Image 1 (cartoon, helix red, strand yellow):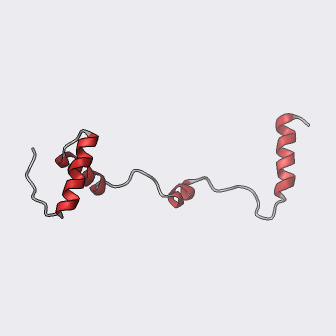
Image 2 (image 1 turned 135 degrees about the horizontal axis):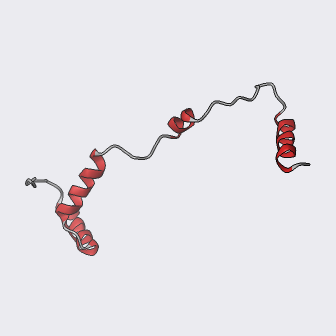
Image 3 (image 1 turned 180 degrees about the vertical axis):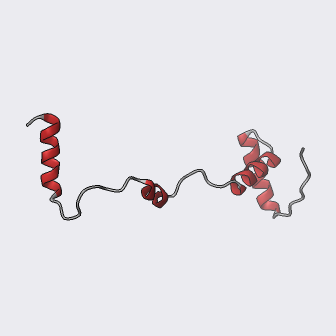
Length: 80
């Protein structure tokens, strides 16, 4: 069900919005509605910090020589 909404904006802005709506082949009401939908819905993008925290914790010793471990793993994997 749709409802009516009255907005008060500057005339110059309204003219710009109307011309933009015509170029996009949409109504001003449709533009406003899609904007409100975008603003009120939570973002689907995840925060990078949340993604990093979900990663598996490393099992490598903090004092290990990473360069040496790299070469040993490649030697096992590729046989050299």
